[in-house]
Amino acid sequence: MENGTDYETDVPEDDEEDADNDVPAETDPPEDEEDAPHTLLTDTGEERVDTEPPENLPPALRWRTAELNKSLLRKGKVKEGDEIKLALFPDTEYDAEIDRITEDVNGILTYRGRIKDYQFGYAIITTSADGPAVVNVRIPEKNEMFRIMSTADREEYYVIEVDREKLDILPPAEPLIPPDPNND
Image 1 (cartoon, rainbow, N blue to C red):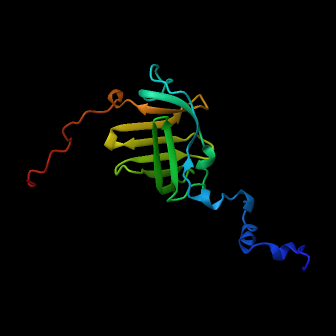
Image 2 (cartoon, helix red, strand yellow):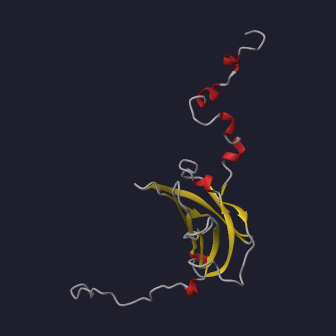
Image 3 (tube, rainbow, N blue to C red):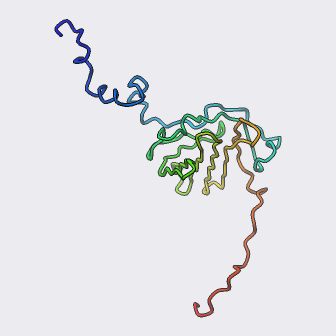
């Protein structure tokens, strides 16, 4: 209408597309935030190096409690090519670019991200709609291994820099199948 009260004709075309979606257009992030990395941990608990982590967690060089951003791990929230910020400790922060997302028949989502600036570094994030999440981060170039997990009886998450010296790893051994004598 001439007085500007005809709202149907004043609606921009891209809002008409959002009318068919479940999410209102108002909740979409601003364009400058779409490329910003997602943050996996929303709380940074006090770092502890002089005490053992709670029972049933791997041996730790250091550890802390944390709050995991579970809304980030909902199906469809993260897409291939997205970046996730891993603020593990105040002095240890990495960015992982998601390059693979899979879902198994049980609804378990697995995200794999490559750690930026480290050719062999990676993060594996595994979660389900109603269960806990587990995050494994490896930086072979720096001989670092981190794990984010909860204990079975707690809702609290722990960030752990794993003490690789104390891991129960089998030593190398001779192969059980002898080499083929015809293959020199």
